[in-house]
Length: 178
Length: 155
Image (tube, rainbow over all chains, first blue to last red):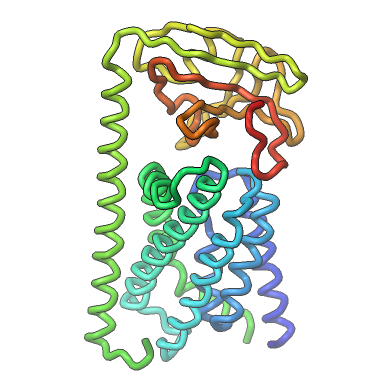
């Protein structure tokens, strides 16, 4: 990894943490986009590490309060998005060429990964709820999934739109670090 | 994915897109089914009676038991009947209570709302102006230190 790459990754990590911590509408975030794109450009391990690190910081400092027991689930979820970004990057012959086909693929992947992230973090929240209230874990999980459905919808659709710029962003990152 | 042919890749992505659509649509259907049933059960009677406790975080707790309001009202509506409430409306999220009876959020101390359920005290999952009150329900406004995890329960 060269100096430019390290500098860019540092800036992107700081930017992601800053956006996560800034007051914003619930479930509209850019960390998924950045983790995925970093995965595409720098590989699965880097994308996964960036995503997990940002969620670790977010777990303690978030505007919405401490993540508590949900933090490991958030870290795994965001790490998974970076990891899949790296795997997707391997299927592309040339990152510098952005095509409509790539954008559509990334939008679908982005929506799917966001939904998996939401299911995972809802499960984490249900574990927390179950421990605190003594309710059955599966009952709590179904309850959290249903009551959080609108938030999941907002998250998935907003990320589907945001992921439209993932490949152009990857192209810019590649050019900056050459 | 590297070994997938274009046809297989298209097939996989189509399945993923349908999966996202199917799961999201099912969750939303479940949400609206639940919400409809909840609102319906809470608006059976024209007047509902609730209990509201306000804990100022300094040992003072004032209970407003047997507060009666028109059904269909929200927790914010009923709290404003028994206390002076200042709040900010956040687009998409609802009302965020800034102060109750001139005691404002400060540092890590915020006004949080709780409800008594069959499992004991349960933290409010939505903004207070999004929660439709039900007959005989008990709510608790707790001025508490939100930097503690898990959040301290009402005493």
